[in-house]
Image 1 (tube, rainbow, N blue to C red):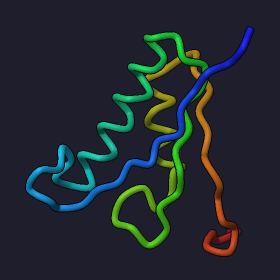
Image 2: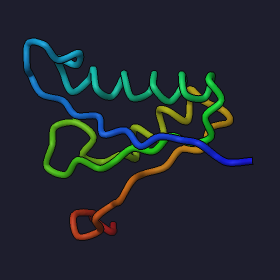
Image 3: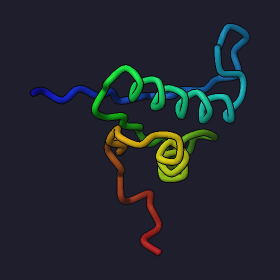
Image 4: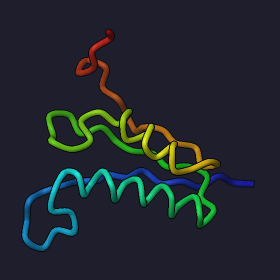
Length: 88
């Protein structure tokens, strides 16, 4: 069986036509996306890192929140550029 998942780019901009008016909207919608993907039978939900952005600068709190709302789907990150991460 093949696995299927998605990589979310979760961009936020305060534009009048954007469906995400705040950084909080992006985080909540990302969690909802992982839950919906699990309900539809997807195998994975992955979120990319947005360095220096006001939302999704670190995917780890988002992954923890999505993990609390899901039970089967694999959660992970896109590429994490380690030069921007604090090893401590």
